[in-house]
Image 1 (cartoon, rainbow, N blue to C red):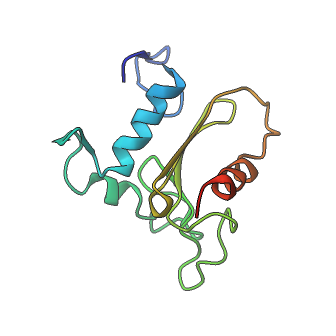
Image 2: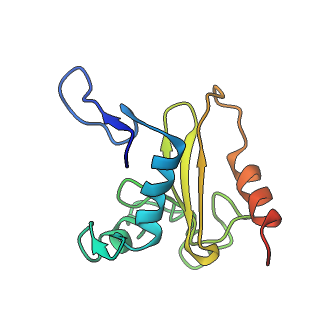
Length: 138
């Protein structure tokens, strides 16, 4: 990431969902790092197994909706059709930032989607992601 600034909150704590400022291309690079299992240009950046760990639902996530700092679309244990975004693949995961900014990774589609913008809780990101998938060659 070439144009990124990470700032702590007023207490000096780095917050994963806020205080990180980057260009859309840099957020896409972040998504590609996860899409490529923590490897960038042939070099392992993240510890082996970290991406799998972060995309594994927490035992407390009844709909398989949360891992380690990543939102997940896994679905309910035993019934994966009951999930946050039924129109998206169950392997979709995303970082959800301030004011509905997103970095979504869909490994089965080899796809990273970045959405920057301010919508004040009214933007339908799932529809955008479904529409992008439909626009891609099958």
